[in-house]
Image (cartoon, rainbow, N blue to C red; front, side, top):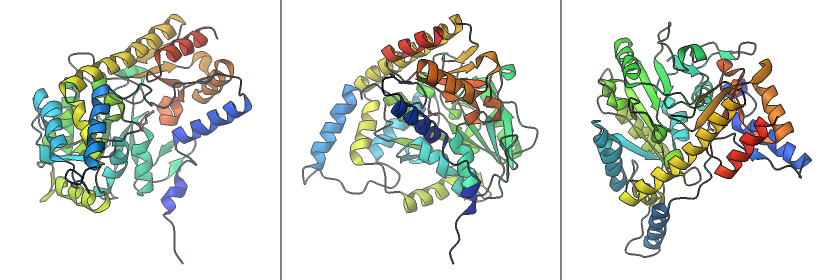
Length: 404
Ligand code: MLT
């Protein structure tokens, strides 16, 4: 008789954003006359930039001609895209990352869930609290998280690093030593950023204790301040202790197109084994590569035209962030984030729980956000709004909240 992976039974019934979608859909079905504004999941709303559309069209035409048709993509991604990434995202920022240390994928969500597979299930993970739920849930599935304490909302074998107003929503070095450390900066969900000096402390710490940092830099395009690193590889020693995850979803609007990459430096070794070889082995076995046309679209992100168009797209969303930030402050809310990230993190009013505020916002002004407690216990009493809506909807949502 077969057995199932019982670790799945330990998980909350559905993924945070699926739970929210179900609630909102039920509310919408019961109230078809209400215009719901969705500022919950961080999904983009602006159309793909013209340079990307052109690259997609050209690549589709290539696929329609026998002499330029392509079948399976190379396991690790096409050279043209990996070179463009190495040049623009790394060399241009003074980071020593070679094209063959970059693994192209269909997005950072999959990579951030899958990367744990190359590590022993004995490893102890450390996460920020609040945290993007994929890091924790994927480790629960693998049997690495221990038992769930319903009262505290924590897993027994996970080291939590609270990110609160007192520490500016950036974690302190943990008291207990973890093996794998998940960091995401600019941060989802709080919108906080980390300075180069502070990130260097993390790299030094990881090298000292023999831990690996899994660094999610999906929101780096939203950095507006000068002393904030765009990559962990800007830090000295990071090649020996860090893996970086990147996405095309937020900087180029690829949430529905799907493209991302992971950087595993060849210097990152456990004894005699390079983690690069393990991830290459996994990628080669379980993955057949992002579609050619999508990789060509990714290449267009780095063209001169693409860069100019996407700079405007990021500025559009950051203008929304500014509107939310200032609008809510005027209305008396305690607000942070929104300066180096497309997320605004606000304290719920009148001591409401995150879910109470979610219900109130949905029912009274028909605006959807994300309850902070869905990201971990330290998110209780907080709420996340995304700047990825249209400008018009963002203005309307903020005005409705102000009138509450
Ligand atoms: C979020 O809303 O946290 C993100 O959109 C989720 C994701 O990128 O997978």
